[in-house]
Length: 363
Image (cartoon, rainbow, N blue to C red; front, top):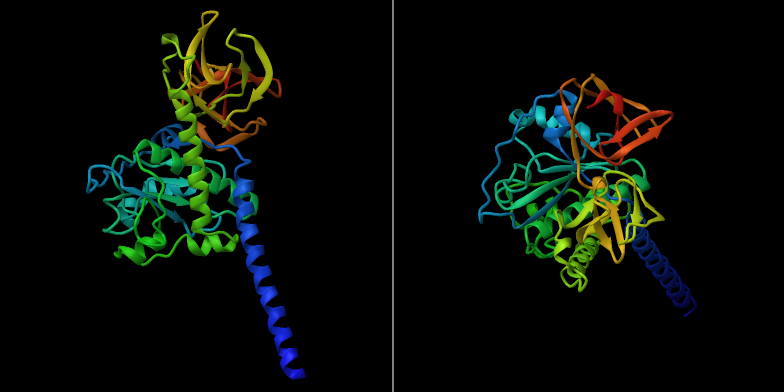
């Protein structure tokens, strides 16, 4: 009897330890999403524009016709290439896709999203059963928890935007092989034509899984949907406020919030912050985008201005550091946002949330 009691006690203790471990793993995974939502969206960089800035030939992938004329969903991949950034992967695939017979729509890391080609046509990312049905997005491997959270945040927001763009609703296909959000593993399991199991192993490294990632996608999808609904039901909308752009966009330049009467507030939204454009209004002969109730930003912080590079130059970081790998040739055209800003005594124009170009080198 005494032995039975001891065994029962041991079993109970082991059970508690198991439950505690499972709960700990769930909390850890959930906290990734909580952490991710604190970060800003990096916005999309288009491969052909990036390559033009770097003086590299763009080897356009021709695309695959979708089976039903448009994408049916999105396949989530991970690169299985530790240390390689989205930029590294984009350069490699642009150069080698004809030799390796592989291509995807975008690479995502903690700092940027590089869209390789328009998702209007398919790519070679998940085998013949999926290539003519789904958008393919590769998540790059990160080496810290914070960077991982930033990367999945970028990925989830980008995917949510694509779902809206193609009028698709989030539906997790990983458990039953039916839906709009697939892992490469799910494609292997339910469709075949490939044997990859990503991103499961990489996600597990961070105590994460596809269900958690799906929840993050769904969160941003619903957030974007809510904001769009608010716009369509806005009772204060006037003819003057029909938007030139509409929906979720990213600020290309730091932007102060103005009231509808043109009064500048103390609230500043930094470059890279996501906002939802509800309309536009001319205030004191200047165009502003409405992003909330009695909240407007200078349109130049969203609408890009095309400028020509008159002197060969380099891109700089927000702190003024030269990006030696990003040389811009004379005669190239760049898109700038907002007015000039001063960094360490020199004037710059913003190209995006993290890259700047010397004002003296462009027209």
